[in-house]
Amino acid sequence: MAVPLLDLKAQTTALESDLRAAFERVLASGGFILGPEVAAFEEALAAYVGTRRAVAVSSGTDALLMLLMARGIGPGDQVLVPDFTFFATASTVARTGAEPIFVDACPACYNLDPADALRKITPRTRALIPAHLFGQSAEMAPLVELAHARRLFLIEDAAQSLGATHRGNRCGSLGHAAAFSFYPTKNLSALGDAGAITTDDDALADTLREIRVHGMVSEYRHRHLGGNFRIDALQAAFLRCKLPHLDHFNAARAEAAAKYQERLKALPGAVQLDTDSCACAGNRPDGGPAATLGVPAAYPHNGHTWHQFTVLVPGEGRRDALQAHLRERQIGCRIYYPMTVSEQTAMQRYGPSRSCPTAHRISRQCLSLPMFPEITESQIDEVVGAIAAFLDGR
Ligand SMILES: *Cc1c(COP(=O)(O)O)cnc(C)c1O
Image 1 (cartoon, rainbow, N blue to C red):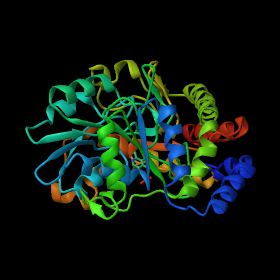
Image 2: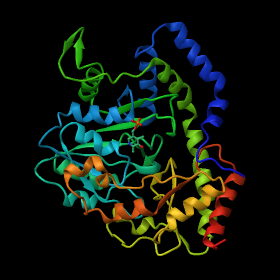
Image 3: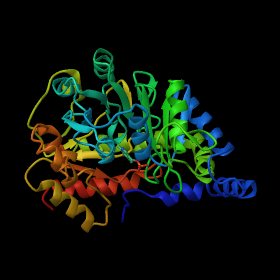
């Protein structure tokens, strides 16, 4: 049985009549950019995340860029970013003219290592952007403390983590501001590109609303440079119709993750990554999992959205061999991310980065398995069976 990496059709089919109604409403309104649909979505999103404000924008990447622009970050400034993340967390920093400073990853939860962030702070550091990778919150307490002590702007890259919680609060409400993405593969997805920013800072939200429309404060009066970071009314209407279902989608992912964990842990030589000895908790194990397979785990104080279910496959060439093995059996899998950001060609102007060994190791061992709310038990069994055969040398 073929198992896709994700199945967008399953979700849109279930909501088809609601999505069509949203389309009809926008078509009849004649208002296609910003407007009441966007305002209503912003209100719903802020209420969901638990912030005073939300500003809906063109994409998650633009949300990150706008936050840096709003804060006036640019040439001469440094911004701390994870080395193991999607490119945009760091490329947006570089696009402002500031220098991204790459921070190592935690070996157990894959997120930014607070101890390494502390080591890399200089008098030029202006901001810190932890990404809540694969749906699990970064360990925020030390980062909040660091941001406070060093007057850093703390931006959460929450693109993969709408609905995630950390010590009882939603991701997106844990720093000064957060960037979300509604790219079609994200847990809450538009039918195109879209993103949003959440914040409790009214002045910042007002500035962001100006930046969204070319820095315009009133008709053709431009206070900032800004840009075209507008979102379509249609995307906001689709997102309004999906947001009430998000907790249900995330719960279904969590159920699937629990099944994966239970079955994978039982395979010979597999271990669950140990969040008790995680670098975020202050002690750094090195060398990676002493096992044939590292199974991802969530901290007990984190509500994980399981955007991705990402295992580690240690041993030279074994991860790529498992990927080939699964693909041969028509099981979707993908390497998020095969290189660290600092290794990318576009980042070489910042010099070779050899200071993030754990991020580097994870990028060589990680493999994301099929994960979507509608995944069935037999699909999970199919994936686990294929992995068991691989570990057995079959
Ligand atoms: C998807 C993603 C982004 C970018 O969002 P877009 O909407 O695709 O621009 C940024 N950071 C992370 C961690 C992401 O996963």
